[in-house]
Length: 79
Image (tube, rainbow, N blue to C red):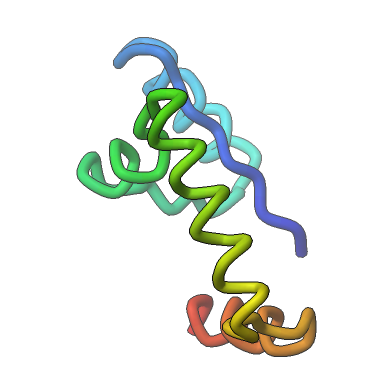
């Protein structure tokens, strides 16, 4: 089963989505507010450039994961 991320804009939208999912007998897992803010934190251009440069340096130094390793990590998160 696929996962879908829905980010309602306000409490009314949240309530509507949750009611709809309940009627459809679909289990919803609400995200905690702290995690939502961390996931969707806006970055400045300078922060983005620093992240990109760090990623390039990590790749050059061999600090990378294979696609299969990433899939394994994701599966562990779901448990």
